[in-house]
Amino acid sequence: MTATFLYDGDCSFCSSCVRFIERFIPTRATITPWQFADLDVLGVTEAAATDAVQWVEPGRPVLAGPVAIARLLRTSPRRVWRPAGMLLGLRPVTWLAWPVYRWVARNRHRLPGGTAACAVRPPATS
Image (tube, rainbow, N blue to C red; front, side):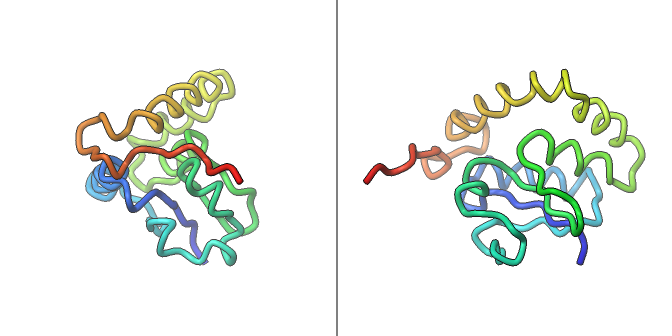
């Protein structure tokens, strides 16, 4: 099994980002919407997949958000992306990247390519 990069397939902004990745950032990972993945087999909960992109690699802990993106960049066969992945993976940069990632996730419906379907809804309370 190869690595898997999960994203929100219902989000046009996320899908636009994935099209950029597929076009410009070659990867050996399988890139798939979490809605079409077998989350149980991958060891990812629906809540985690809804919350952030996920990087699942056999024998390694699941990575999320900017850490997942950093891993995707570091494992690209195109070496130009590896330094960006290494930089993003540094702890101080990751600490700064998480608030930016959360802001983008909350506002993705307002970003280019985003639609109302991209809006992240607060968790339902019972």
